[in-house]
Length: 250
Length: 222
Image 1 (cartoon, rainbow over the protein chains, first blue to last red):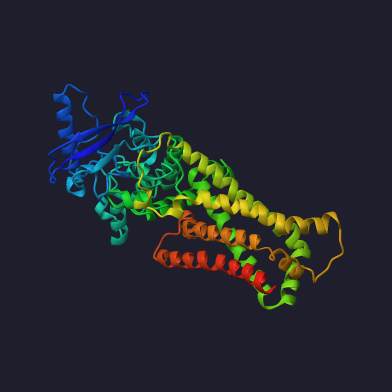
Image 2 (image 1 turned 135 degrees about the vertical axis):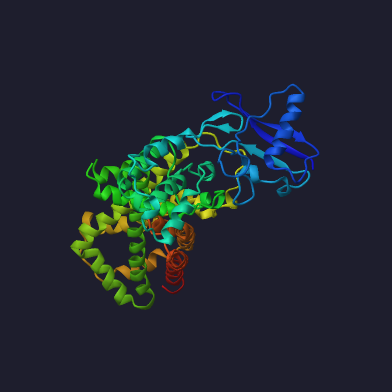
């Protein structure tokens, strides 16, 4: 198929950037979206032009590295997939495709479609962990009985790959689905209780300091999330936060 | 840091505060509708209830200021959040397909809210300001039978009825998202959520429809 790509080009973080048109031809419907981008870049390199920078790593839908806002949706029009798992069969011959970086103040553009999502790392570092001292007599996690429903919900929350589609999709650039998932995966388990209060307060504070917006419950993040992280995690985040603040000694 | 300060400075605290003020306003709407509905079938009962609300010191000097605070708080916090949210994305998308993943009314709460704010100014000018002037500026004698006739007089104008109907349509749009959103904001998302969403839709349609019915009824039969 032959396509017209409208791609955001930005030389550096400080460059103003603009949309540039690129025609591509002979694209197979079996290609992944990233393979189509590879074809474009090979063409650009052959012509002596600068290839389009974009994030990617595993290309198996599990690392959360690929991004792109495709035709007005994070990871494109397909559901439950990252951009690397989006296939060209989702488009038609002659289509014009808009390709933009994930946009949020907290996700500054590095170059073209590549964005800096290290704000997510800093939120994780603020509390998205359990302190376990490896003294040699640490209790085996499997020795602690956990209800199957809770274990399943915790696992569902833990499937968040931190790609940032929730932020890119949200009209407010809110990171609450990500933070909700990261808080929930511990809040649901007994191992997470010890540091629960500090965890939620520190992660929410870091989220606010990074400049993310406020959730207004549109539900767009849940729809666009490649891992199907549920809005119930945001509700749990709100409960955890309220409970932590009400009982906080600080 | 105090809990109150936290509410005004943290994102999660602010959305919980928005939800609590929304619950308060939704309960008030039901009370307002209940009293207004009496005007349809009993002039005496409507006058009696209005006189009670207009003269009872607890209603006048405690509940009324609390209500005004609740309304102002909801609007001011709503605008403050909207401004902060706009700043969280400095460059807009060239193409954004919002309808693919969310409802129109959930994305446009600020616009439905703004229209309701303009309507409230109009509504206060119609009823609240004359009432305050009557009681606390002109110090006119208490008349328990004036309320029904004042309302009927007000709804003689088809233009006013039209504005009121339009405002209640916007109220429906606001509530279609706002009702269930308030529950989500206070952390209530569980096995009852789907039923609650249905109750929210019924509330969002029936309550404004009730106000529209009263405005039309008073215009046609008053």
